[in-house]
Length: 101
Image 1 (cartoon, rainbow, N blue to C red):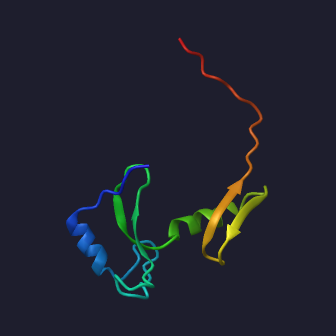
Image 2 (spheres, rainbow, N blue to C red):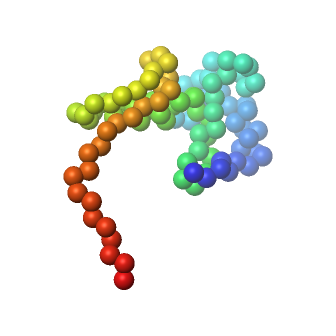
């Protein structure tokens, strides 16, 4: 996981943002308010900043898509939108080791 890469200009724009870049819905509170739920969304592999987003937005989509699988999903929910942890058992039928040359 790469550290977030955000420029000073992007940080200033983030602090003034009024809309989530993913859902295009407004943030309820101003930047700095104790209830402000905006976060700096970024690519977890490259660290590249994507934009201001609602807290837990990407995990919400991930959890939602897990529901289409037929196997059991275990999670600890704080409420309908916020999850403390989740896990899913995946059975691996075979294991193939790459040959070293």
